[in-house]
Length: 303
Image 1 (cartoon, rainbow, N blue to C red):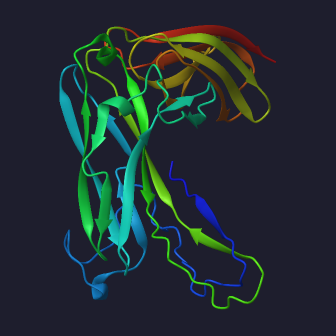
Image 2: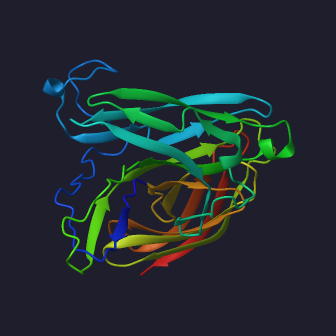
């Protein structure tokens, strides 16, 4: 989830003044998680080899599998494919997710049951890159030997550009008006998930399942709940068994993640008309357990 923000700074004075040269920095056109096409090697600089496509961050998501009492490190790569230097600050902010998968940030300093920000560190937290330079920053998760380390947790890593505010003097001290200045900036967001390999409970349940159809498609309405301690990495599919002909159709529905303690709602369309007849509709949910899968079955008459 790369997000760009704009910081508006208002300059007030009894005299007129204007900032003649605005910072025209544009957000990077580089896709999240992809590295720019720099012809020289890592850590090199030189404006003759820079394509000036912007700044890139990789990876766009980090998945940790840190055991309780242990530490694990993943490298964050920042590439400055521009003809000017850039400086970034790295912070962490926990977030929550609703049953439709929409995330919301938690206020800094607020404690959440599954927050990872207290156990993660970037070194350094301020990174400066010369034109054409690439740097790798260690991102380390250190889990305590306590019960909290036996369940999943998550956070968002924010990589925000630091703007140097210029010192501006009014050009004419006799004019009494007000001028507004705008300094654009941008930042990147990286989702970070910690799913310990030895979670105590691994369980995702189907709480509701409906199947409908029309002349052009089939529709599955699904609710699932993660009643375990770990991340539920789920794959769902349905099997349509024509009870008269024995013909079976299998459709992959969706792959998704369910956080611990969370219920998710899905409405999924499967293109294609269904023939008339009596059907057994089997929904299968594979949530990564080696011992079991979750399933639900309906009988449907298509007229």
